[in-house]
Length: 358
Ligand code: SF4
Ligand code: SF4
Image (tube, rainbow, N blue to C red; front, side, top):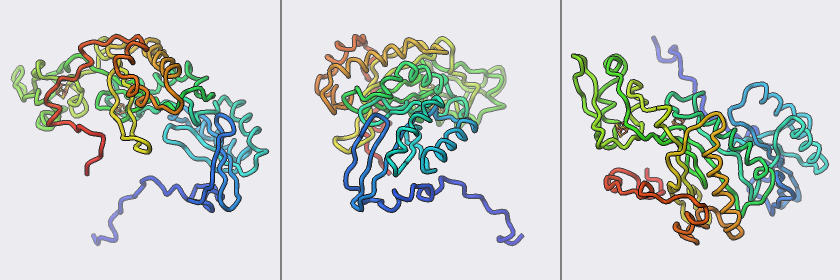
């Protein structure tokens, strides 16, 4: 078969966002003179050309069904200028060039059950990982944790009462495709995987599972006459990395899979260096459907930050100024030996800075 007759791959990556951009934003691209924040959930940008555009932001649940998407788009067609965009934290933004449209647009969104806010020094929508909808290894329901927490933090989303912006994240496994933020709620496995030896030889490529383990705790083994694997439990750090390539190495467990809370992560290097988040609470029950224990700790940290931080300090800046001992005092969280990372192997095998290496 000639090359041109062969079926070609369909390149369906992320489309160019400029084709969906509001024309006034395109016209003034890179030419903005100033912007302000007239009220929570609304931004105003003024260009050197004199053009003005208002942006109205509303929270969404991230994983959107088609009916909700249609509703959001209909609101955009009817009350805004027919353009929307989604932010990194799954908020939806509408742009309007007529100030008179701002209040009716907010009313339409709120009447339809959406929450307007998430701008400036508020708690933005929690960014969460794919969860069970798209991924095969979650140890908790990321969307459920987000729903339960945002129900309790709704006033912090629609008001600007925090010293600075707060980004919350969740991650539903310990490999962690998402959880780095001012406050992150991440799964924590506390026991090595249990191996279903009957299935390993049918399901798993043993060399790739052995290669996955960051601490070389997995060895090939023969069990009941069948090729299988074994785990050196003294070495295992319960990371869960062996579970994706080999589901019979079951690590999710109703009792021993917990949640942990980390604080002070910041990707940005706009005003200071990026920072790694640090563990502050571990062994929290993974307790659906409302996860009350994890939510109570997040609220405790937010309250201490709200009371103690200076204006415009992010959580990591605040902790750096007051010090970790004081952080544990003001939040009332216990400091235990498990907070000390004494795993020497990390020096050789893990990234030791937040700088990206290519
Ligand atoms: S955090 Fe882990 S389990 Fe959750 S979606 Fe990402 S890779 Fe999958
Ligand atoms: S959980 Fe992690 S450390 Fe333990 S055996 Fe699996 S890959 Fe290795």
